[in-house]
Image 1 (cartoon, rainbow over the protein chains, first blue to last red):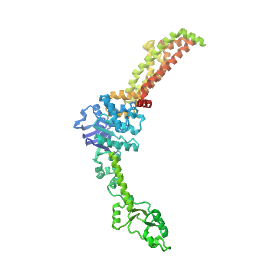
Image 2 (image 1 turned 90 degrees about the horizontal axis):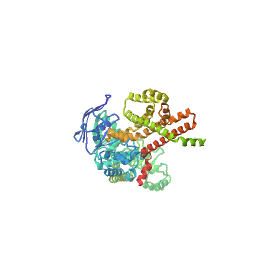
Image 3 (image 1 turned 180 degrees about the vertical axis):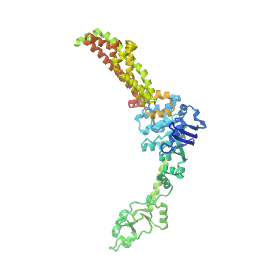
Image 4 (image 1 turned 135 degrees about the vertical axis):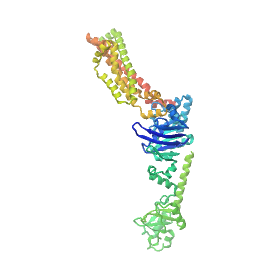
Length: 385
Length: 225
């Protein structure tokens, strides 16, 4: 466990970056320090491996005051990953990964073994990559090496300073996923600095949100999303994310479930045409909309057959007006209630001005549920594999 | 004409060889001294942030560079007398600036994030210097040394004027007795010497920085092996 007790940091120019910081970082968890630039998150992280010295206050690792330790010795016990990767360009990958074990005077074969093990762990085939140089690797591959280099000497603490923010979005996602996977095996105490809330929510066990050198709120991602402490936290999380979070917990809406292009017909169509259209679309009813796309009503195959003998009639004459409609944002639960209560086979979705948007049918509901559940299944499989 | 040269070379080659050897020793001594002084100073400057120290050191090195070589040699006579010693000293002063500049540039060129990573991983200052900064700055330092070597070898001919010997001595005598063969032969020797030295240092530079540059072929060979 890492503990900050009343830590202050003031730079020589008088700028105070940390104000009476008290923080406990739990063992075996990913703690994400997040905040706008200049909030002190990077300073906080660099205090841990003494790249920065506090002006006052104490920092303890497992109860030991780190000011009493030799900084070089301390840093060899703490993994360090930086944004710009910082691989040594004149050393091949194997030598880069083995830097700290070599300094700790590990046995050569033990180092080679560890390097191979780590390379395989992040999907870099040792035979192919061990002898390559950093410049021959893609950015994502380089940062994988950056991460395993920090793991090489098996430190219990790893500091990561915006490690994925310089990567392209695809590599970033991959590395985030890999970090999560590695962490389930390794259970390191990871201090992760970022300014990206999505990243924080994805990775963190605990998020520590900072502003102006102080902690504004800390807690699990869920706690912070559900109970933002103040307006700053709300604005930092962003409206979109809060509503996205809410909608995840709720039912899908009518617009998620509806069929967007059901069989429709103009009111001027004759009955023979109507039967032909139903046949080709394989449906038992047609929705009647005018040229302005406003919903007028619906006809079923039975209504058409009843009046089929009367050649002068159009669908407008026999249709029944819409009895029940729902809006786009009507929750699916409400739409389903409506359908079962009134024994409806379908319910049209319209805008406030009766513009027709789509149709919820029993079939579309089943399809939607099937999609949702199969997606969750895939997710689980991916997680297990 | 070729016959004359052939005869001359057969006749005088021990002199030419001796002068070439002398020439090489003077050049080598000045460059070696230059490296010994300029590289550490360059390293120190690169790690030091004080502005006035930079301008002071580079100012002095620049100043040496601008003194006309003939004048510098003449100035040194009352201080150091004549012979090889003042010549080596003068050429040493000239070698300072390019080596200093390149060493400084080489150390400046090291990516700060590489150094930050090294520091954060627990490399001590000495380890950072020897394992990271120096190897990465090495190509820069070597190109400074190569540049300096070529023109110091050529300037060493002037050292003959204060009695330091070397190939310059033969050229000066050639002028005195109006013997073209002597002038041309000595010059040719100096040129060949400079070219060979440049080639040799180039090979040294390549050998040491080979891995970083042509790592691809290297790595694939190893991977197959």
